Image 1 (spheres, rainbow, N blue to C red):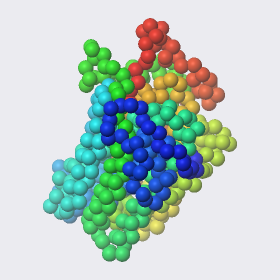
Image 2 (cartoon, rainbow, N blue to C red):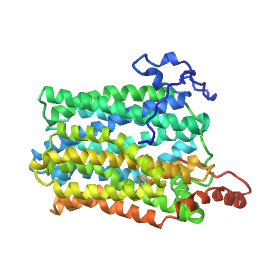
Image 3 (cartoon, rainbow, N blue to C red):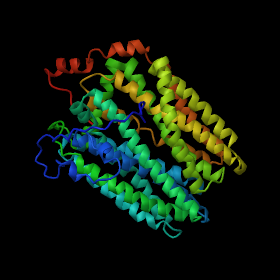
Image 4 (cartoon, helix red, strand yellow):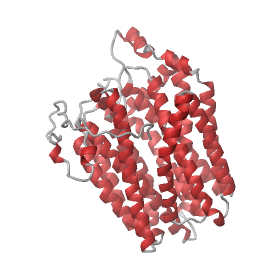
Length: 490
């Protein structure tokens, strides 16, 4: 999500990329299909164009998981025993737990591959193809196959994170190539592109489901077919435009590739703690908890709406469509609050608002006849998410020491994933222990509350801005290593 929703069409031709020996690089805008809004989709550089189109595919993929999750739960409910003895109502959060643990363990290693080898584009393409192949197989989700499809979904969650890792590693270079002003404009465009594709997808799937009166399973199958077509198109052109890159840094001869990512995470964390502990340090700790709670809301809400409110997959899709639309006024409102106060105050107010909404939602939506409340809470959740993501990104961009954008962008991404497995795991344990689902859902506020406490311990906003006027991490590294450049890692 981004603060500004302003779009701008560029009439300049796509700039040729740096010479890389890659014959698959797009050099002519005519290679992009002539479709509606194609002039808006084409940006100043190949990488900028590819990243935007890639994000469109990501938006569709995320929304398709909503319909598939609902179908898997419906199929599991028809069995006397769900996967490995867990309840059907724990299935989706259990899948999220496995995906989260795989991501937390493997992302540093995958980051080292992206950073220390010239295979960034190849890794992204291979994992994207794997993602699409698994989603194609999942069209066959029926009563006799749902267990296998659930296992595939757990793997697919990790695969999806690797595709994000590879594509987002281009962002620092895109920013350097086009400049800060144009990057700000493109950030708005990227949100509009992703939002537009998600809306087209959701409206189409929901419309077909309602018109033909499809059940959860058939709706999920239709959703997967449309997902493959739309996301496949976006992923193909996304990676066709994203260019081949050289290795960003050389791997030390004494440092194994498998350990390189973990060691770099440790070095970066140590440098932040030593030089920016009161500003960037507390912020990244807040990000760790806030992202864990916020990202888990999708998994938890699908389960909760399905079990407590007895929503169908179509109704859940409608609720998420409302959430997506309401992120727009949420972004505008968040920007207004930020301008009236400052980003740190704004994010604290957002967390308080989010906690109140979650408490109210999981307290009042307890029976099927409360289904109408879900749509109202969808509005509030959308406003909250639209407020949260751009404000968090703004804080990071303003208190990040200059000269280490790539390294810290990678570390930021890792912070958003490192404990992402914990909320779904706790929800699953509470559900399996026969706690009420509303308490299991409400426990997400614990992570948001911890994030709020981290922001309270963070230095004042003026002190945070003052702290990054000089890059102490680079200066310290020069003193210790004779002026060598700090390694960059994604």
